[in-house]
Image 1 (cartoon, rainbow, N blue to C red):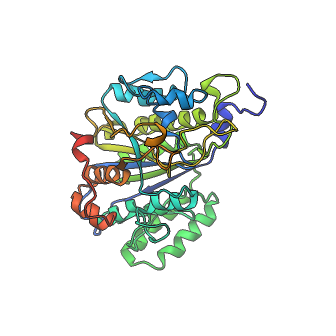
Image 2: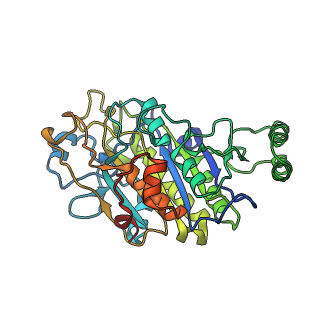
Image 3: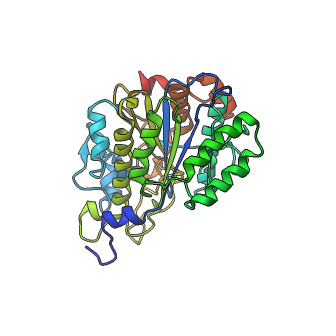
Length: 385
């Protein structure tokens, strides 16, 4: 192993992660608790879908990516494999509780982290055009107005409603948390202020939640499994931006940079499964990434910003594992702009299906009012039937 490599234990310790819970039912405001839970894992930096789910049946894969195609991948079918760093996800596929969406992306092609991350969270039609996020708008539409309150609350959870629920995702000082909640409660009605008063008392208790993504996922699952717990959660996992050294120099797939990220992702999904318990049967988990990576390997054994990637779905609401794709091919003429995996499926359709299943909203309303695209294709039956 190179002296510049870090162990997976150290990686888990130092990799940044944030958890946000939302959609807490509030008596008098929430219409009915939705039929399910939805959890989003934000893979920031651009996950390489051709590494996570290698299309080994495409003859151009090895031709163009021999040096970075994972060794010992799990064979899913006669065309696709699964990276060896995803054993938990693989077991869920065997149990018919996980699916893959390949050659997919949000409709964004300019390859900027800032714009891409904004669009995957806002679900808007152009970068920085929306002040709310697609999941936040979904919770508004489902009349579940409880919101995560945090100094760095992600755009994806921001809605139009004014009622906020505090969750100490970043603030550690108990006195500061209590004071902040009290200030917030002063701008709310008497009934709402009572809710914040209870939260203020809770905030003075020492937090026992470790700040790594796996423990956060398990904690989120346990909270969401409660009768009056939140119905939505978001976890951030970063540093997927592998422009260099995407693979290890010792030939061990488990030591390469992208593989470590995928292993964290796999453990996050397992953490959700453990924490959710019986609530797993009404839950859906999906990954988001701003874009994929280039098909070709660059001169520093990495990949650059691309277009099409992969979405991973897991949860008990999936009853039959599938790979959903309209495979575009990897030859030079089939690549987007001669360099990237072509995205043939709008990932907003996948998000819409997950919203429909978890929050009980109609697809036409989701398409028009959440994603502002009335003709957004409905793929619900391909995922949940």
